[in-house]
Amino acid sequence: MPGTELFGAEERKEINDVLETGILFRYNHDAQRNNIWKAKDFENEVKKITGAKYALAVSSGSAGIMAALAAAGIGTGDEVICPPFTYVATIEAILFLGAKPVFAEIEETLCLSAAGIEAALTPNTKAVCLVHMCGGNADMDAIMPVINKHKLVLVEDAGQAFAASHKGTFTGLFGAAGSYSFDFFKIATAGEGGVLVTNDERIYKLADNFCDHGHDHVGNNRGMENHPVVGFNFRISELHAAVGAAQTRKVPAIRENNLVNKKFLENRLAAIPGVTFAKLGDPNGDSGTFLNLMLPDTETAKRVVATFNEEGVTGFNYWYTNMYHFINQWEHIKEMRTAAKLAVEVLGAPQDYKNLHLPKSQEVVGRLISFGIRCTWTEAQMTELADKVAACISKAMQPVNA
Ligand SMILES: *Cc1c(COP(=O)(O)O)cnc(C)c1O
Image 1 (cartoon, rainbow, N blue to C red):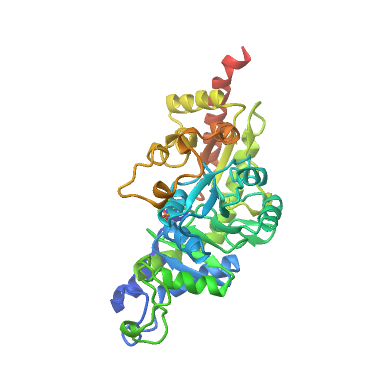
Image 2 (image 1 turned 90 degrees about the vertical axis):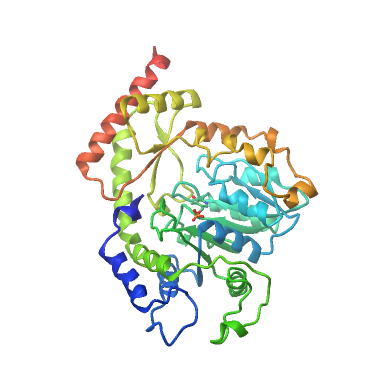
């Protein structure tokens, strides 16, 4: 969790700027705020890194996904192709808009594959919500032709992939809109927060309205603003935005350190028989937040995880059994246990969520063990970790070799 490692004087200064004026609200109050606009600063920092024409800071990455989908025209009854390996927020955003998730296969990039998307198409497919998982990037060279050929709306959940890019284009900017998360577990944190990015002015304006009860943000009398569309409250506070701005300024340096540390560990672990690494759509566009080990099969990966636990290795995720990232544990979604009826329950689901056939995704996630990269690791710490990890993997592989 690189951002949290570097929380310090810069973040405190930004928060203090806000505390001194007392204007915790991102809009209006021009006379009292002493020209302090932290949400705008945060947006500008994100634009600087990604080159996005428009950025909208919101209350969470989840809110950003929902706003991106809504602004892209996704609503009741629309089928949205999505991966079974993501943070569950992707699926929730689709469901709460009244749309219908259609789960498709991922590949070794840990993201939806072009073939997976094509296989999941129906005459009712409207959009793809592509998720760039574990700090990396999807195979956009293969995916974009499918999106274009079938005239699909593309929305990117880049919750884990801020500062990741693919051949010069940053994640989130391939389709209609994308969303980054700045929650406590990401490359940079605002405490809670997200940023929607797009190059399309119309989509930006709609998202801006949608995330603030429809307010058009024209003029300086909030009570008299017009509301072009129905919206909701997905606003970010100035306090959160202040932290987000300070953290985002640190991201280029964080990414550089992450990549050095990731390379160091990969070099040490690559020689272990049976160990490979997850692929990247563009190896040069990684944000370096995760070291993604691929074991030969799920059984071996499970033995490695058990050995890590026995030997006290920490800092890794085995997503295959994680409650929030992989469909196998999403009983609440498979059984549609909802607080109140969703559109998909009334209109009918496009798939039998309890009996999905996604063997490739099962295989990829079953083999995957991810370590969160720390940007402040010393070489000594990484050497110790690599040695421990190598020893555990060798030990866990023995029964196979015997
Ligand atoms: C973290 C994350 C989200 C949710 O972001 P929040 O800011 O916590 O709402 C959505 N999608 C992915 C892939 C994530 O990793």
